[in-house]
Every structure is written in structure tokens, then in C-alpha cells.
Image (cartoon, rainbow, N blue to C red; front, side, top):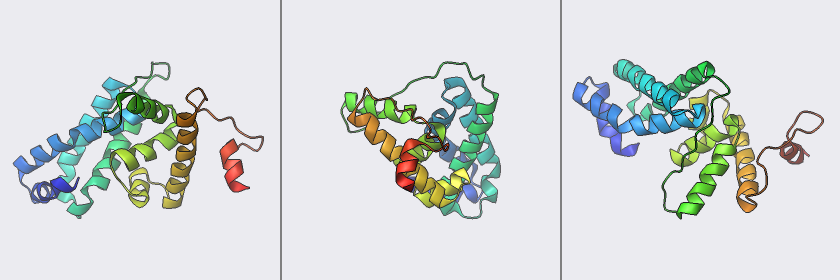
Length: 189
């Protein structure tokens, strides 16, 4: 979000045109983050729209404009979680592929592997690799300790590596008798 630094500063200073341009610029990020949480197009649009509206209303009160990305992503995550609680659990999960430099098949495989992660692991991966946040920033967005975020990222990396090395392998890991995931037991031991 570095390219928007000047826009953020002007918007925080009360420039309504800059605020409108900023919200338009961050809308795609808001939608993608919301979708990665709720996995439903309509709910993601609603959550992203509400997050953008909340950000717009609170923009003039932002004390550190250089922290806009973390502040904004936190609002998006909170709105998406709120929307997720209201979604029926039996609705089908949507699939999407992101267009990057990799080949089409690789993008689909990576996206499918990321989508198959459980939410507590998927969101840190999305924030890290799709939005370039550091683990400390992800921790602020998610309201979790940085060490926990780094643990989630490590677990997600392991599961993604397994899934991408062997596409036939299930990404769902069963719990060990003590309640931990098998790969957590290995890491702890």
C-alpha cells in the first residue's frame, strides 16, 4: 500500500476526494481479505463494503497514517468475522484463482491448497503473501500475539508444502490423542 501513502495522508487531513480515491483503491484488497474469511461472494462484498464505510467514517481520526494498511485490514477482518457468524454453515464454498506470475495450473494449485487450509492458518498466509504484511503487522490485524502468528505461518507452510508436493494428499490433518495436530506434535517433540 506504499503507492497510496500520499493519498492516505491527504485523506486523513480531511480531503474528501482523496478519501474517496483511497477507498476505491483499497476496495479490491478488502474484498479479497473478506472472501478469504467468509468464502461467500455476497457476504464478502457486504463485509468489504461495511469495512470501507467504517474506514471512511474513522479516517480523519487515524493517528498514524503510515499504519493505514494494518488499521484498515483489521477493520476488514473484524467485519468479515462478523459476517461469517451470520452465514449459514451449510452454504457451498466458492473457489477462485488469483492471477500472478506463475503458470495458470500452478496458480490454481496454490490457491486450492491455500483455500483448503483451516481459517486460522489461511488468513495469516493471505495477509503475508497477498498483502505483504510482516508477522507483527498480521498479529495486530488479527489481535493475536506475534509468536502465535509465526506459529500459524509455520504450520500453514508445512501443510502447503505437503499439499503442493502431493496433490492427492488431504490437507486435513487428524488430531493426535492429546488433541494437537500431528505436525504440531512433531514440532514440539
